[in-house]
Image (cartoon, rainbow, N blue to C red):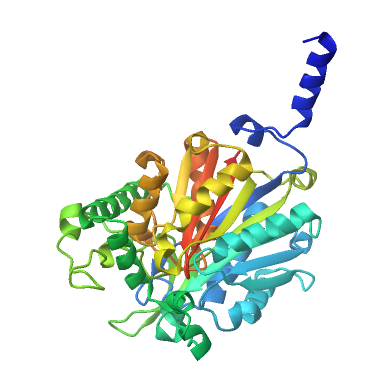
Length: 417
């Protein structure tokens, strides 16, 4: 090859898209970055710290926390997207009101959205994409859910005859527990493996909580709380996940009766907890953050959303994660931490095994089995958990992912700074 040809190859290689961990960890002015990511504590539905607090009130507290912690001028935030699943009317009215209560001016737009369990992540991705497209310069992606007040039979949509008479469409309304039993049987996921995974989630969460590893990501909130024993109303500070339980082992979980089938493997101890909580993420371009003096804690790289069979809803991360990695130009081995939502141990175990991911990279501080899955909140909660842990351990690349009701999966790639 002549010298001229060699120079052309070198030029072409520089012009082509760079791939690999080194490429996505480079800093560029157009990067969509995170300058604040925080969450409320997650509390037990019906009996935890937020049992008497409306979802929008939790959200308003978290919104105010973002303003206070980041120091952002609220008037610079052009749009807020909030993921939720159960809120009547998609939460549109009360979420706008929550933003105003928190201190955002009337110029800040607000919307609610619902993509089931990925709603919080979808809200963040929508804001990131709006920033990339130049629609806005600064925005917040958030998620919230009060499963205390809104979870139950009323959240299930009645299908028309048209939908009921289409087999695959009708499968979209099969209850989650039943879906998970079907998947566990279809994919030969043993109860022993599920209970071992669930116990590990509890044990990791207990260890992390005792070591104070959640403190940085959790914003303490003062709320009204009625004591169920005395009926006395008190003001309490909710500052810790209250679903985390010490002493859980695979053996103790093995004694719990199956919840959805006599010969089943799914039970309350190896499935996500019903919980209340909120989380929010502040995003902008790197050039904007530098101009505003905002401290950059991470950046958004890529995202994917995919569909799978409704009855195999739980396999969503298995399909979504490789797509997000491909879009980022990295491999699974480049990732330091995976935050995969523990909707059910069955689906998490299968996805992890099928993808060939090392257990030590999965949910190092535990997951939804141990501290809860407020449906619309989780996708946003994962970002505060992920970026905080990447920073603490001096690691760089993370992936957040979850299965999604009706048969979907979503994933995103993040880099900590």
